[in-house]
Length: 78
Image 1 (spheres, rainbow, N blue to C red):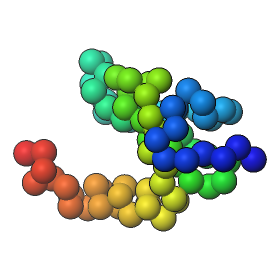
Image 2 (image 1 turned 90 degrees about the vertical axis):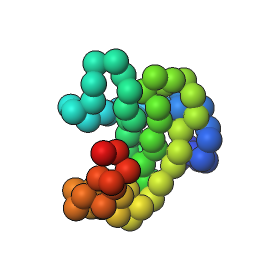
Image 3 (image 1 turned 180 degrees about the vertical axis):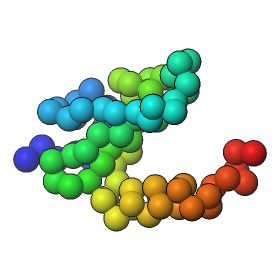
């Protein structure tokens, strides 16, 4: 299994499908996520897809998505 560390160029992560939210705007100002073979997730900036990826565990992504769904970050964007 490929070792994937935080900050690795996202283009070096092989065999993954990068996905972005259907709510992202056409200008590309969004993030993309890829499920990793070991159960974690990689996140990259869609404007710089060749740039670095941040790697998170499943629990970390679940906590973030849950918080977003619950509105915990709403005050940061409005």
